Image 1 (cartoon, helix red, strand yellow):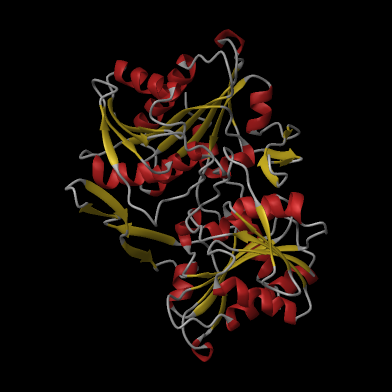
Image 2 (image 1 turned 120 degrees about the vertical axis):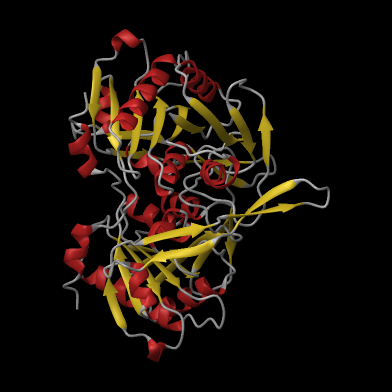
Length: 250
Length: 250
C-alpha cells in the first residue's frame, strides 16, 4: 500500500506522528504532505492568491515528507499533482484531536483533505479521536490501518471516502463499531461578544455543542454510546429529492 | 421578504452592490454581512483562533450593513446569531464573478455561505455569473430575485438551497433555464512550478479547467449550452449507496 498522509493539526502534531509510525511499522510506503502549522476549521479552502512553498521535512526516517504553507486541501492537491512521484493508493487524513461528526464535517480540514483525495480519484479515510486530553492514538491508528487494508483489499471505487471517529477513553471500554450516517450537530450561542482594552466589541466563535442523538443510525449517536463510527461520505451534493419538487415550479 | 446578503468577493465588489440594489428596488428588507475583502475559495472555513470584528458600513442607504474580517461562512454565522436583530427569511450569496459548477462548489466561498444559511435553518441561494469581463449583473440579480420569491411563496423547507449559475453574454442569447445536478469539473496540470528571485521553487494553483459535459442533466452542460443552471444542493454528505456495501465488510 502506498499512502499519502495529511492532517489539519499541522505536520508537528502528535496525531499524525503516531499515524505515520503505525503505517511504517506495518510496512506501508508512506508519504507525508501536511500543513506547516495548525489549519483546523479550514473547510475545503484552497490558496489561489498566493504561492505555496513545500519544505522537505526529515521527521520520519522512512517517510518522504513535506511541510506546506497551505490548507489541508492544498496539501493533498500539491502532494498528488507535484510532490509525490509515485502512484498513491490511498489518502489518510488525521489523526485529528477532537470529533468530526455530523454537520461539523463541513468545516473540518481533516475531512476536507480526505474529500480532496476522493475528488482526485484516490480512495480516502479521515480519522478523528473524540478526545481533548489523555491522548492515546494507538487504537485510532490501528482502526485507520484496518480500514485502509479493507478498502485496498476490496478494491473499492476511487471515490470511496470514510469518515471515522473513535470514542474517547480506554480501548476496553469501546463497545464495537457502527456504520453510520451523518447526524446533526448545532451550536447554542455560537459567539462570545467581548470588549477589547479600548472598549471596542469583538466576537469569538465558541458555543455549546448541541448534538441530536435521536437518530440511532447517526455518527453522533454511535460515539455517544462508545462505538467507533464509520460513516461513508461523498461529494455529490445534489439534492435529488428537491430536484423533483422544484421542477414543478412555474 | 427579509434577506441577508453576503458574498465572497468582499463587500465592495460590484456583484453584491447590484444584488443589494435590485432587492432594495423590489422593496425587500435587506441586511448585508459580507467579508471586508476578497475571500474567494474559502470553502466552509471558519475563524476559530482569532476574534472577528464587524464594522458598520454606510454603503447602501436602505440596507443595514456590516463588513466582517472573516470568511463568508463567518459572515453568515455572525449575521444570523449576533448582528441582525430581525428574523431572516432567506440568505443570498453573490453575485459571484465566475462559475460555481460541479465539484468546484466544494471550494466556493459563495456556495459555502449559502450552505451555512441552510445549516442554520434559513433557505438560501448562491448566485454566480459565468463571466470574467464585460460584466452586466442585472439579469443575474433578476434571476436571484425570481427564485427568492418562488422559494418564499412556496414556503420551502428550511434546508432548501439552490446553486444558480447564469451564463455569460447578452440576455437575449440565454436559451432558458434548466434544473440540474452537479457535474464534474477537473483540472489538468493544477499547479505552475516557478522559481523565485533567489532560485527557490514555489507552486501556484492554476490549471486548465476540464469540464465533463457528457451528462446532459448536469450544471456544466446547461451552462455550456447557454442555459441558466439551477441546482438544488444539500449538506447530508452520507453516501447511502456505499453504506449498504461496507456493511458486508468483515
